[in-house]
Image (cartoon, rainbow, N blue to C red):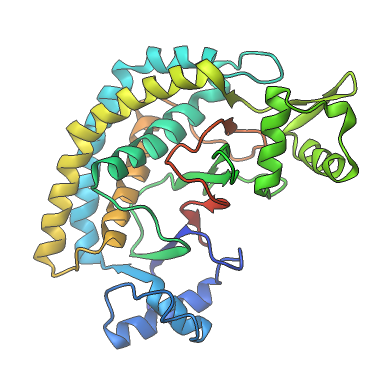
Length: 341
């Protein structure tokens, strides 16, 4: 049985629970035996067993292909870091665009959030989607199987919870080496309450019993606190004019990276896929974008553009509120690129 595989889930399973590594390995063996290389329609697999269903969602990247893709990704990160380094002061100035409990957060509290979350992950993803280089992630999920691993030390991503009405979003960085005392679990109604507390649309002193329960749960996570019997958001928030300024700055920097590093690298990756007969399915192009993301984080840390990711953090670390979805989604919750054990 193939053991030296790193699994990464892209999206969220309907149950909300990721499959076990043992089940993933069995499914991968089945996939290899059946010689399937494409993701099949999810409706066709809805009535199959869990293992068969996983086979249809697994996207295997073989070692002989990955060695070339990793080389391309590492070369591209030099341009990532040059641009981010040149624009680092602009990004630091973006701290003034955030608000948290009436205060402006300091850069050391925002460095990972801005550089890794807003630029390297969401900013580049927005460019990939907007240019048509990638199509939006699946409605539920794929699972990438990297034979031999991604070759990177900093597997990270952004989890998002999106409010249904206007796309208000709570986002949180995850990192494979960072542990938190509590796993953040939100729903669209939680995000709506945070937005209303932030914008003052509801008097927090007169929440009904259900909203009081939600507010207490948010207080347990540390996302809100009570001040003079009023709930106040404690996480950094991008809202109003500050959100527009920050978005413009991030977009400008992410677009430079996309044009100078990401798009050329995607072309080279397509050539590698073609050389090895890999179907040009969007799941594989997403997988290469994943490699770019992880290796860019490695390089940014090596060049001291951001500190190492912490080994321990509370729920508030690198968790933030946005008044709109950063990649144009407006439904439910999204767990983007969640790690697998």
